Image (cartoon, rainbow, N blue to C red; front, side):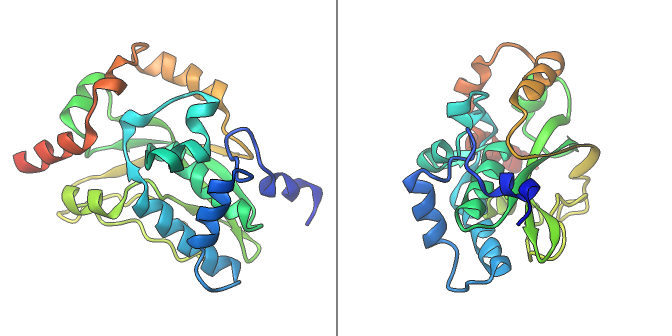
Length: 224
């Protein structure tokens, strides 16, 4: 493996796969195969479905973004879950990095729409995994229960083609639209993300502490 690729199998401030809990989770959820693609698929579904998606768990600090933190609390927003999946892959020697894009989310909760004053989610995070000589995008954000409740088509991953948000939900309504790709990184460009969030979103983060995303989804789905 060349020197450029080495950075994608090393621990980093947030991708702390040298933490014993990440190593254990990766080993226990990588399946029985020694093939990297099969292992990555198994890890993808483990992170997607055992860690609940929760935008109110956002914490833009190194400690808050660490893979081990997300694993310990059992929930995370898209960036945190992407970091955890990258850590699990690296723990098994599979090169992985973090990718980011701005997306327009047509299906979110009323409270989030009111707070954000926009339907654009800046710096949405996904994991880019190096398999069979290619970088493949994997998006482990929405757990299967959330997809079922929100009538979303689950995002599957086969290790061969990019796993991205679907443009429409199961009822044909607009769901997710990719607006801008921001690149892929060995670790999270936290300062760039903070600068964008300060510019585009409220500077008051108290709404994060008061939010109950599961309850909001229940209300939203009952109203539709």
